[in-house]
Image (tube, rainbow, N blue to C red; front, side):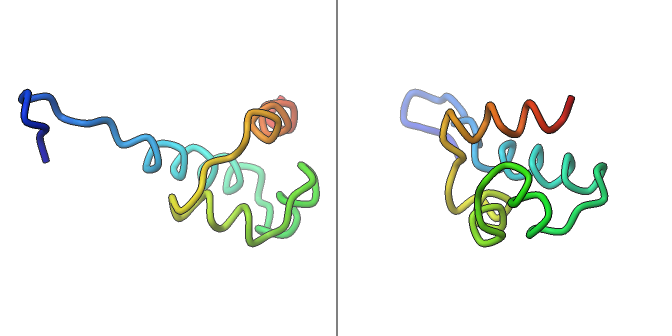
Length: 68
């Protein structure tokens, strides 16, 4: 899909979803375990992985800390 100016829009939700899903898989954690470690529900993590919502800046910092 291209915009009228010919540019292809970025797919931030897909990259966000892939990043979170890959990290969670690498850590061998369930949605609930991952969410508990960063202070959100399993449903929130699922929504991020499905590209329905994005993590807040605070949640991204928590994810970053968890990944280190």
